[in-house]
Length: 572
Image 1: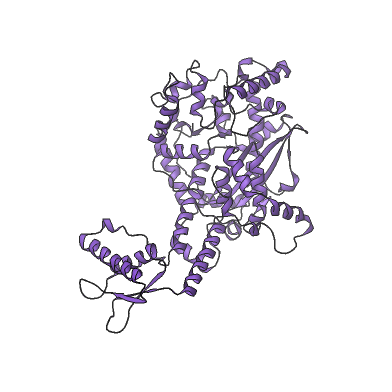
Image 2: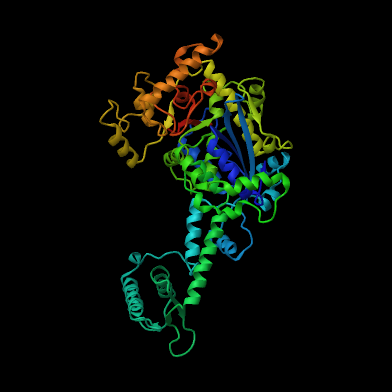
């Protein structure tokens, strides 16, 4: 289904509902340029150097399209249902007094590489249409700045820390605060602040006075005196009730417009387990006039959709994030919808794992343990290869299908990634590919100090292995390490012996019922002694198709990606 700025909020409840019930969501991103120098095979490129190049590309170029394919399993039909949404994305702001001000304040800039433009044009991507009709967004960082902008009547200036000023400036700041505080305490009608150093108030002095009024005395207003004997001073007076009410109303309307402008970020906030329910006004999600008959059912659904319940469910259990060659997509999504990318690759890895604790890169799954002389395969080629398999069965919901789309349309590519994930994971799992694989050395980020402290506090007393003192690489190479310790590293898992026995029992039943040809070794059905994300359950049928996240299979293929010419990284 094609999503643009005109129908985004109309379809938002549906997308959130799909996210809430999905086992996984496959994503794909189209950009106005990419990092052209990841490094080359055989060259000595560090992970940090390669990340820096990707970071520079994500800061320079623009996300133009994001595809989402949500997938869940239906027990009655024994098949996976796939629903795809293709969202054009625009960095432009709509025309309004607030948006015009935000456009100047945020001053977004992006480039289009000639190479990428030619590629997009060749694949029939309409750049002008995406910019003009794409869904709006504000990143977390931009949302914070926009909120400050709306809350301030002095929108042209950032906060000045008086403690960083020289002694004379700090003395003036204290003088102005005392003057204004005394005026408010006496309930006066008006008074004038003059320059204690003589002459007119200079630019910094005016800015400090307005900052004090703005941040500490919102019931007051300050105006510079331009004529008369007090020229160069500032007149401070109380706002009358009508003006105060008008300002408060304007501010509330501006904040509502900012929430609406955050657009596509709301969906990413949901997928990352963040808070979003209070940012959506129900009136945005249905037409004020009677919709066409074909859309009446959506209107009824939107009117009764419970955003708070959906938020609570996604905070408790969010879907696995799946992508093909995922690392660069994650960098662009982080920069566009969350916050500026960290300078250090460790910071990026840790923050991504916090947002998306379970990710799968289908390209990493395909290339793992293959030698460098093997032929490269595109997503389209892999999708065609695995598409020949009859099982696992899946069905694309025709209501969400765009029959005209093809490869390099983000929605279509996300659909191919979803199918590839299903078929490839099932094949690798049932052929036991993960049992005897040679573990590559994965780059593992250094955990932030607070996470190390938390791990040592929670697990250090009961485990012989200290996570803060032992490298993950050494742990991954040792089968004898206790599974409880391994799962503690996977932040999405929680120890629970009773439920783990239930999962192990179901897995054993699935193994016993499976054809012997699909059972190369019973050990690959081993499940760790832990449960899935809270509220996440697997039916007996589904458990046999793709292993749950607790299975040893995902120790080999989960939360890992690769950087060409630099090696592998672990997001765990």
